[in-house]
Length: 232
Image (cartoon, rainbow, N blue to C red; front, top):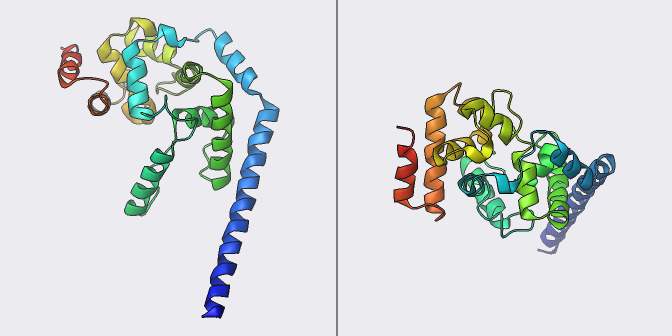
């Protein structure tokens, strides 16, 4: 029995050392990214862009839709969501493949500004360090601004203003509830949900957004029906 215990302890030590090594690489990746461009700099560049839209200029329902469908605990967590990560891990194990990443809005902002799309453990750890740093540096509204002003909506639109003007010929603040909830669902898969490419799939995605909002108590069932009626 002693030799079995020694083997198990040895295996555990190897796992801990390997984990520490990977975490260290992720932390260095995070530090190098910040040295190349600071958080203050990305915020400054975003705000100074001609297409910048502040959180105050966005329809409330659009902000609620984004938070509901992308990160429902956005206003409660500090950059990472342990519940979301655990849920994603459970679903991935059941499926036997990577279906969900458990990323918060803040993590998505970190990835969009600083990292590539490589699905490596080191990159994910760097993203987590960056998300935590962003939560310390910015308010939640500022993080939401970084998100909507630097994310792809399909059809070549790289921010919420370009998308609202391109799809609806309206400034973001002029979007009605139907347009707001339609737009909120597109970044999940822009090439699939762009309304100019796949209008029916875009509507199906909007239905998912609205149902999620009802589930998260951000809308009532009656309000959902009223929003869908705006398309008629």
